[in-house]
Image (cartoon, rainbow, N blue to C red; front, top):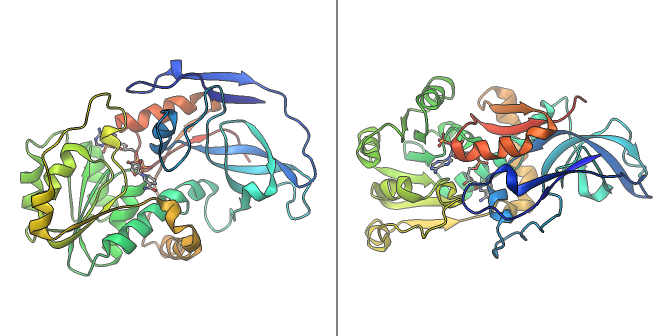
Length: 333
Ligand code: NDP
């Protein structure tokens, strides 16, 4: 068996130096345990936070300990009557080829309902993040304008599509012309901008949001968000989902003060963590699966092959190399 551990804590952008590959023995499963062969491993921006030694909503990864996150796998040995060899499962598991875990740590998924990888993307945590952040906090009404940053990523692409389903005018912000084209032509966004190419994000958005911004779903923070906050309408809602532009910063992330701006708009910024909605996951998953099967919601994934490429896939998130959800395919079922 093989695993990837955190060798030391990144300063700034993570690099290969921060990770070590180890060969380990795998113990036979005890009663109540299953052996899960990893098929797809998820890499996610929040993992960067866990690589730092700072207090947050999840514990930091320990040095020399295996990195963990969302994994879709196949049960290859079972000491639990509820699980059979061949069952496909999702769990928060280690960056290992094989994980031996109590069966309570995994849940069965249905490969007939959707491709297995979808349980790490549109039907998984990123899809649910979009669903609850947008609908519970953003509450877009028909005809309102929704702006989403990180729009061509795993969360953002679902946010924009759900906003369209709800009848909103949807404008995306993403980091390449190809992504902009994809959002408008394939996903039905009303418009999108490439923040790396426009001279002034606020001005470009103002032209695309003639009625102002009612919901800003914030995935990136920093200057992009400063620009959008200037366009908020009265009683606008801002689900604060992430701030990827600051995750690798080593200096203070200073920006203009926003209190007056928010006061004038009487706008609300509400940060949230998808885990806050754990008790309602099945409700969200049901709607997402329905929209997916009806063709109202499209899924997109960028899949890199090979266990050894997990760190590379993770680094790519900070360079915008992914369209949709970034995954690593580790093995065939
Ligand atoms: P994505 O699939 O969106 O991947 C990250 C994307 O961020 C990249 O593709 C890149 O796209 C963009 N990006 C990278 N660096 C920058 C930068 N400096 N400025 C602007 N954009 C940048 O990841 P996810 O969809 O998984 O996550 C999106 C956000 O949501 C993250 O901030 C993440 O931490 C957060 N999140 C929060 C959750 C919660 O529970 N609150 C749960 C899941 C995610 P581009 O080419 O457009 O630059």
